[in-house]
Image (tube, rainbow over all chains, first blue to last red; front, side):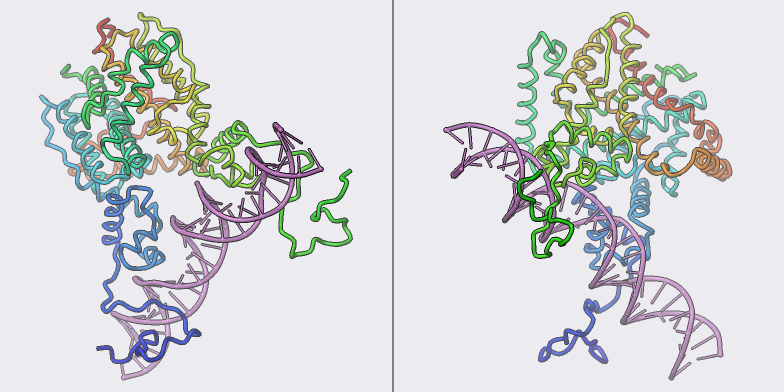
Length: 250
Length: 250
DNA sequence: TCGTTTTACGAACACCGTTCTACCCTCGAA
DNA sequence: TTCGAGGGTAGAACGGTGTTCGTAAAACGA
């Protein structure tokens, strides 16, 4: 189809002369990169390979291009992560504030946030320390502030609750990501066997030295389902928050 | 003093022949590496260069040796981090449990933990996802469990509180580490100017779209001192915990 | 002293983020 | 239509990472 074959598309009879510069054969049609496609590729890699699997070269390979090409669309890896985060924020939902049920609404929002983060392993790591100034991030923070204010918390309590409750939520997912990355190769049975081993180890500790650890071995290693611990910690925070509410909802 | 000079200690007159294998000049006496010295070097680097500054080559350079030498003493970087964590745990203190004041005791222990972690930037990152099975870690967890049980919490609440309260504490320090790493080159004035800029940006948002953000701009960007937000979140958790206590301490 | 084991360590491997340079393509002006 | 500017692509290279391999040197014990 080409009017004139490019040098490295020489007919089969003669190989490319070695003095010619190496240049990858052109795709038939050039589908230009864009920030969107790069972010989507990054999110896909996060899901399949986790945070440690995300490299610029990996993203470029996913898009069948070279790593250097990405830099025409994103300033650096950090910016790519920020864009990915804002994309993820777009999946978080929040309700219209209902002052009678603000505590449950905050709870549900954090549950939903957690689920969205869990769908993108590694994104929690990138989120820690980031100020959510992207368009979706601002929307989420506004929605969260609205719920907290519906609870008639003092302004400072509402503002800071946004920080600490979301820190806890993100950190909780991040810790799970780490755990998953450490054990991703193991089967569920292997992980459970390992946990049983740890529990047996704790139960066998000398009671004189570790009376409380031994006594709490069972609940310490009780999983409580996928959300057990997260829900408990969130509940602690919400109980504490409720005690600040002028609505006295507790 | 040497009976026979090693090849690369040829007298000044003749340089070492280039075909001879390169080998670093021997130190006069061989001070052997040890796990301890490696861990100490790692902790020192964490303090001066942060988590991102910690590489095996950097540790080796600190000890005037080659990175490969470290692997005779630690299995890998991950093990080095675990050892460093347990060293840090050794600096955490906890009181003898006093049932009348268990809430304040937990608060103080978390404050102390936070200070110890802050003294080793980056160690918080390494701690997330780790089960503290080193000798110091077990001691700390036992001490923490003792405080929680002094509060007559249900067993599950005590066990899980250990997880979620320490997760929050470690995450809080980790987030600060990230923030510091992002702004470590900036002066205090520059950081404050940047924060003022962000506040002005938020205040100037359209009120129709972001009524709650605009209304909370001041407290959102109020620092509350170095521990303000951490203390607030910890307080929420402790209030929530107290509501579970059979002592009804709240 | 000698053989074996342990420790040390350079080179190399397979990766990383990013920059530099050259090439290619598109578009607008002359 | 041609030419030049600008933007995008992408390989090579730079300076880095954790780790392994193979070898030299030191330490240890018979």
